[in-house]
Image (cartoon, rainbow, N blue to C red):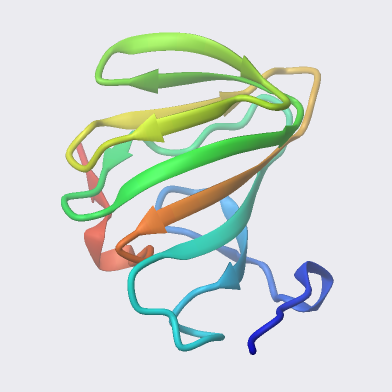
Length: 119
C-alpha cells in the first residue's frame, strides 16, 4: 500500500510555470498509468499556454478563482469545478488578481516535462 502525505512532498516548478507537489507519480510510487499533483498559482499569475501530445488532464479547483482557456474558449472557474483537457488541446489557466489558486491535476499517462509543448 502506498500513502503519500501532501505536506511531505517537495514543491517544484513544471515546464508550464506552475508550482506543483506530486502526490503520486513515477518519482514517488510505482505509478504506471496516471499521476496526481497539487498545483498552485499566485494571484494574477498564469501557466504558459501549452499542450500535451499524450496526457489527458483533469483539473479540480480546490481554492481560488481563475480563468481557463482551452483551444481559444475561455471560462471562469472556481472551487469545486472539474475541467477536462484532452490530449492535444492548447490550454492556459490564470489565477484572478485577488486570489491564489490551488488545484489538483490528474494526468494519464503520468505528467512528463517531455510531453509539454509550447507555441
